[in-house]
Image 1 (cartoon, rainbow, N blue to C red):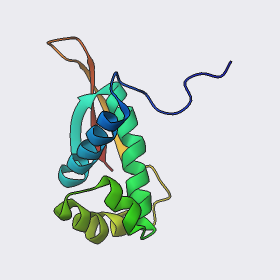
Image 2: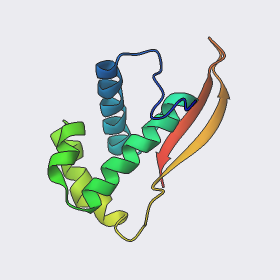
Image 3: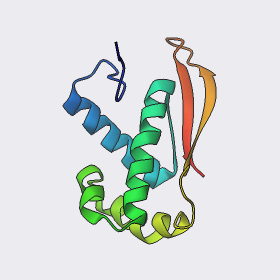
Image 4: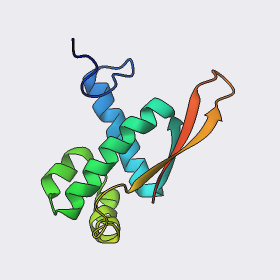
Length: 113
């Protein structure tokens, strides 16, 4: 039996998950780092890598479906896409930060390389 194909559900509905990762990707691209829990960080890397790859290949419509903020959209095409143009992938990095004090959740820092 094949299981767990696709993405982590993170105890959220599909629309909530899409909105959350859209917002997290926007924050990551704007500030170039974001702190979150480890499972969310691993999924965020998948989303962010796809967005950067689409920007490098000039796919404006696909990027616009995820990134709603005009400032981040312009930064992505004017600054980040040229920066990663020669890089075949791996534009993000996950750094584990340890357990969060309140609920002992494993936290991580996602940053652009």
